[in-house]
Image (cartoon, rainbow, N blue to C red; front, side):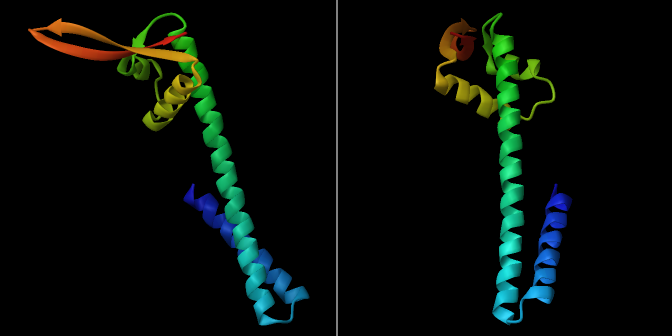
Length: 125
């Protein structure tokens, strides 16, 4: 990913330099054109990354809804069902769905070896 960013940044600086060579005569305008080109490139990369992240979270959220439509699962069980998904993405998708009210959760307490344990379970409402 860093290679892509560096490629885009170098392209932006090159375009800024070409604009400066052919059209601009003042040194301030040259610097300004390079800075603007770099900002445009950086903003484009950031927007693309945000778009891809939102797509991935939405896709994982759909998978979570599919898994929870059949049964109630704990977070660990759910995470094991979603093979090869990054933990932060699963967290974000699950908690967004809970916040929107699509997925419900409750704490179930049980006793084991004389101790009371609590487990949060998630389900489709």
